[in-house]
Image (cartoon, rainbow, N blue to C red; front, side, top):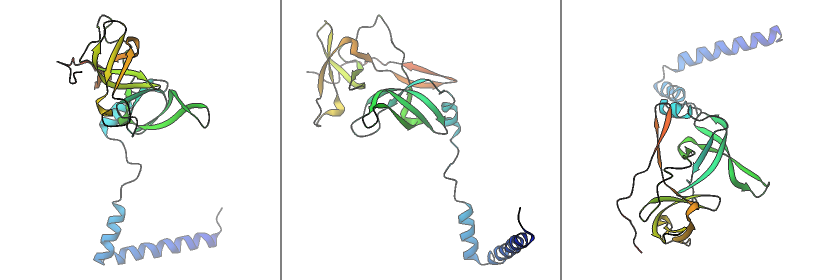
Length: 207
């Protein structure tokens, strides 16, 4: 409990502050400064209606993929599980990326724009991947986007990674058919997601 003397001091301070603001705001420069201060938005601004609607589709325990958004991870997709949903971010635990310092699967807070739901396991069980297809290859604990440039009609596909051209990374790689999946685009439709695959008209790169 506050003492009567403390309460009097608080009241006196409040009265003086109110008088100061009411008198000083007659000064245009002070008025502008106070108005500017009051207009500063909160750092915890609310997400947009679109972000809120999309965020509502993600639930704790849901499997997702983190879309590579930093150097060395462009055009990659890493599987993860949602641990927490918070405003415009998701806390996820990666399924295969391990924190070397702790020997545990990496946990990270990721912006919603870098998250997509886990794609369907199979686009079409009767579809045979072929030259020109936009695909994702299982490598380095994740999936990496590329284009099929050669099919030996056996159990391997050669894939070209255009985003690696000119880098120290290999531009080409040969992978078992079972480690290659069709690339699918996802969009939000109502209260769910819709996946689609646009067949490439022809190979963008010819060997």
